[in-house]
Amino acid sequence: MDTWAQLMGGFATAATPMNLLWAFVGCALGTAIGVLPGLGPAVTVAMLLPITSQVEPTASMIFFAGIYYGAMYGGSTTSILLNTPGETGTMVTALEGFKMAKNGRAGAALATAAIGSFVAGTIATVLVTLFAPMVAEFAVKLGPPEYFCMMLLAFITVSAVLGQSTLRGITALLLGLAAGLIGMDQISGQLRYTGGIPELMDGIEVVLIAVGLFAVGEVIYNAMYEGRSQVEINHLNSVHMTREEWKRSWPAWLRGTFMGFPFGTIPAGGSEIPTFLSYATEKKLSSHPEEFGTVGAIEGVAGPEAANNSAVTATLVPLLTLGIPTSVTAAILLSALQNYGIQAGPQLFQNSSDLVWALIASLYIGNIMLLVLNLPLVGLWVKLLKIPKPQLYAGILIFATVGVYGMRQSSFDLLLMYGIGLLGVMMRRYDFPVAPVIVGMILGPLAEAQMRNALSIGEGHWTIFMDRPMSAVLLAVAVACLVVPRLWAFFSKQPKQQKV
Image (cartoon, rainbow, N blue to C red; front, side, top):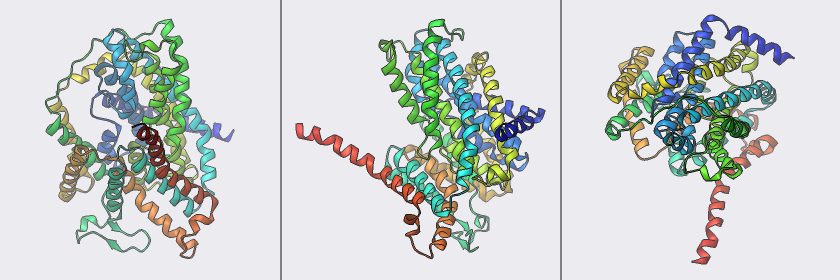
């Protein structure tokens, strides 16, 4: 009953005219960003982080959440019409959605994607409402050893497991950890690695890193390597589904929803894994397997889209209750909270309950807004694809420059941002993941503080991490994440080598 009362209080806050306006603008902007190929919520939220100095916390978090979920909705449009995923989570949607569009069924594909996103987002938000407070109550009982081990697990899963290359992922993570060490030591107060530069005394702003890696890096990369690419838009028919398509879609929506939610709640999450699992499941269970890979199967759009949006919504659970982001955009949202001096974690539900419940309530409102935006206005979003890339990316560059300069009016910040942008180009060119840099920079200082506090509790003995059952289990899981995939790959190759 207490949860219900707090949720009603959250609705009272989220339903104020100003917060409703922020939610609508965030949803509309997020959908537009999702429609535009090559952009995404991480780039957009990173560019808009400077508004945290002007807007109160609840409104800005509702705004950023609207962008986050709106981009997930809009990302399916380019996947279906152009075979160009606006977000990594919509890659699987392109497999069947683009084939449906080529065969004159783009309307049905867009409709099942939008409705599936609404169904999954709503169910996942209900699950967040029910389980996030329980997780927070449990997390209060954890100490520094457990928190350090959880962050270590997040480092390993984000850098070593989910990327294409373990070495590249760990290299990117080390870059982020190194950047996080610059500035004043949280415990001793000593300056570290500033090189005598006054602007680095307070450390490097996460906003600056995020804007440099994503916005500036994206613009420069596209100018250098993708400026001449041409795309053709498929013909868009009316957005509707037949009775048969409804019948085939709703089981896929439900399966995708409950498949995606667990992956969003764990540090090894991410929307890519459940979308691929959902696609494989729908292909196996479908009564029309001959449509997969040929004319396009609607289940292959419905299931992955639901899994994607469910996983995205579920990222709020570890973000709010543990202070651990499981995606790049969640990491940037964490930095937005930090800009307000708000520390995400188990105490957040007690210290900032009004903000948390208003944010959760805004997800229900935002889901309805996004359904209204995505079904009738698909034709409008498709017209955004006609914006010439030079003008689009020039506008992003100007916006990023003004936003970063406005934080401290420092020319050094601009030079550093463009230098980081060039680093982002190199990382993308040679397939280094960017997510570990952001996660390492945000969680690195927190992990260091938790490690030192844990060692103080253990009187300098590292066995403190093995003596406590929860931290020992987390360490075992982290080691398993590194070892098991390699053992599996090794033994799976053995029979092939014997046959040869």
